[in-house]
Length: 273
Image (tube, rainbow, N blue to C red; front, side, top):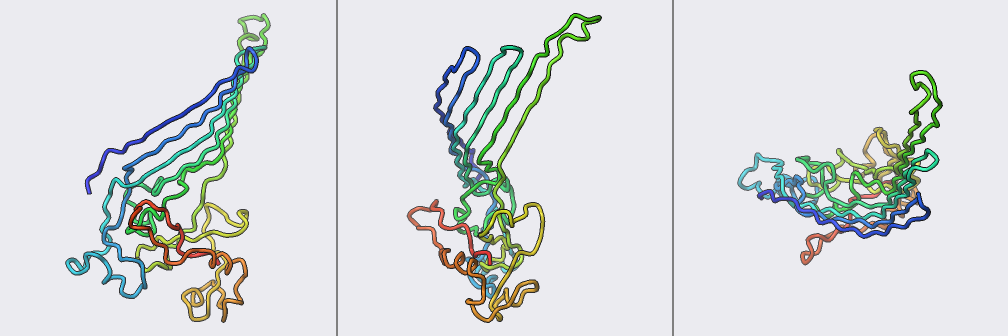
């Protein structure tokens, strides 16, 4: 498909209140919606199913059986941003200038920062809107503060004790979303190896920026039961209760209604166990 010019609509509304002669408070709502963002999809991806027979399920298999991925960069990604933005400003008085800001926001997209030709950007190229959710850069909360203090001067040779000031700044951000990407199991049978896990449990147990084996359980003759590093169990009753409950709560075989191609469905193919 041809690339289209991306469009973004923005809107905002706000109020400003003077608290004193030198202090003012701004409160604003800001939002935006984007369409036709770029992202790569595999137009030759097999439909989800069993690993065996995946090759034959590729759309172009009958014509080009020697092709695997066929990545096409297209203009099909939406994005949304909503934020409460506040700012407290203190103009110069008694030598002090201060600005503090707080933003509470939420950013949604499909590809996020993986928007260029990345075959692992979405789980299922036939239903990319299943990946619509928190963006890679979704900082929910941000606090900033900058201040300057003019140090009172004192007459001195060559004005060495005049014109000095102290400045400082503070920037605090909440963490970014993390995702459990599975690049080996191919649970969906698409061959893309871009499946993602639902992470359930205490956030402190998940370490970002590192690669490590997560607790894993599987029935004795299942894929995970035969995987090195996983604990094989004979029955589901022997698995941790939290894992079983989390997996049971997830939808199975999620579908996007044909009447609404942008329905989000579910973002996960499996639950952490």
